Length: 269
Image 1 (cartoon, one colour):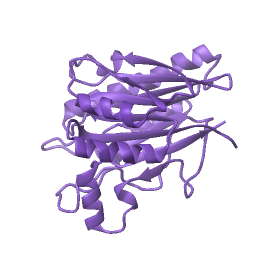
Image 2: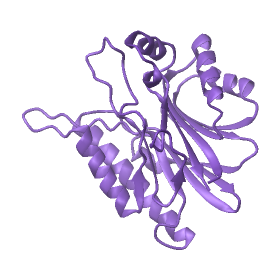
Image 3: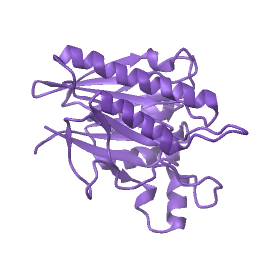
Image 4: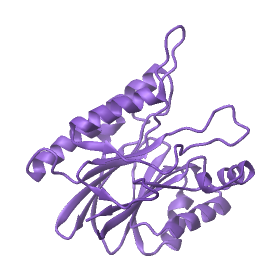
């Protein structure tokens, strides 16, 4: 099958005005050669300037508002695309990031890609807000399906740092990250969507010296009829620290780039 477009998703922790680090990150991102990408936790104006200068084949869009961290989307200039900011994914919280919706037109077909950076917290309020954000994303699938002419018809993906870390609550049984993901998977199935598979179980690590173990925080949920290039039997290639063979090499990559790995995928026609 031919490629429709490639897509990268990467949370670059506190991505701001350290020009040396910004340069490294932009170089790594450019090396992946994605047709479309989303970067989360953009905090500094120099990030945008560096991207525009060093990646001239792309056009860029960024969310705006009172939040301190933004979602930045890059699109190859050869693609026809329309960008909108979706504030309903702030769920009434002014400091949360809005959704960044990109609509691509490829060979007469529409593809809707929603970039999300959901609430990060293992407290009850964090789980509740994330759950509401996932519900809104899945309801949006129905809106797109209706516009496309029937249930399951829309070419829709939502993705990003979904922060699926479960919930901890004193004196009660915790809700694990696996349980939170199971609920997301069930909701996706009802909307004829599925969470894509990855060729590495974890996308986040704070390094070998951390008391927190590596975690599975970054995801892509897509319409179940869409097809994807396979990477060792998985839909998503996890790039960055998980590819490195030693703890020391992984720690250095995390320090130089981000605690999140980059997710790469290719949608097939």
